[in-house]
Length: 319
Ligand code: ADP
Image 1 (cartoon, rainbow, N blue to C red):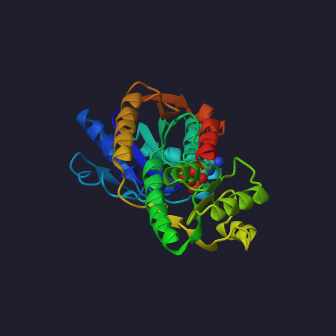
Image 2 (image 1 turned 90 degrees about the vertical axis):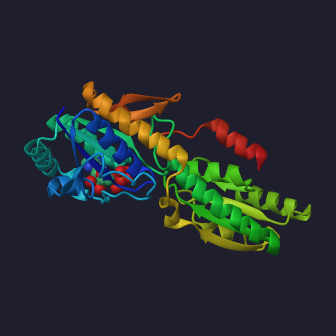
Image 3 (image 1 turned 30 degrees about the vertical axis):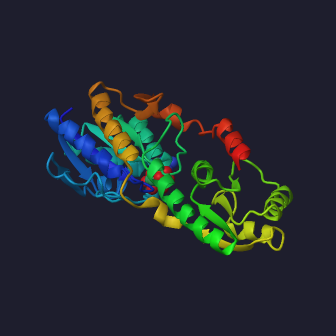
């Protein structure tokens, strides 16, 4: 391999820059050239890129977002457009493409590999932790810590005023962030897409706790399960607290990556280059039992990630 191309694509996730840095520096140590395309697949289609070097990626690890920027490129679902991308990559001499992104981006990578033999490898980055076959994706830990920090602050003011807060967090298809942040702040309840909620039982339970003297209540809801407003309507006049709503929104995507995400991204970026050199194309770097391994993209994308039922049980037991 002589020249590696990198894109960051789809939803941004803290730690993407650390992955770009790791890919670049690992490649540089093996005298492989690296270019970074801007705005995901758009940069490949427009041949809009910069050369990345050992020194040019200095100081980016701690930055949130992605220096390569990201974009959604819906036309990439069209095979003729993908053919153009494959042609551009060939013309530029890119003989290894690293795609850092979520399931959508990895689907684009899989198709480039299957249809046009583009030597791709994926790195999972998604704050939702919804990518199958890897224990963690880049950005999950930072997002979680941001959510927990915000909820802890809400809990302070909730206690002062004896209020309930309904906090809506990200997670369209996955309740991971809601569940883990709820666990971390000792939320009264966590509402996630994976588990149907019985509002009668829930409102009654919160009311009983209130009568026993509880002075705050945090209910976490994943955006994919319900909106905070609809949850509030179920609670109206039934839980014994004045209720407030907070939608954490896009602050969950930003911020300097945590040590965990920096380390994960560095390991995955380093491994991506080594796996490309071993010819493991059409795969994704995954974290499995603490090790970085490859999983065929085909396998990753044919499944849905399931939340560990034990985690759900744990949160139910402690809340
Ligand atoms: P994420 O990668 O975070 O899941 P998206 O689902 O928005 O984000 O996907 C990012 C980009 O990946 C899309 O804008 C598109 O360029 C590409 N992509 C997504 N789905 C497909 C698909 N089915 N076929 C080809 N390319 C896709």
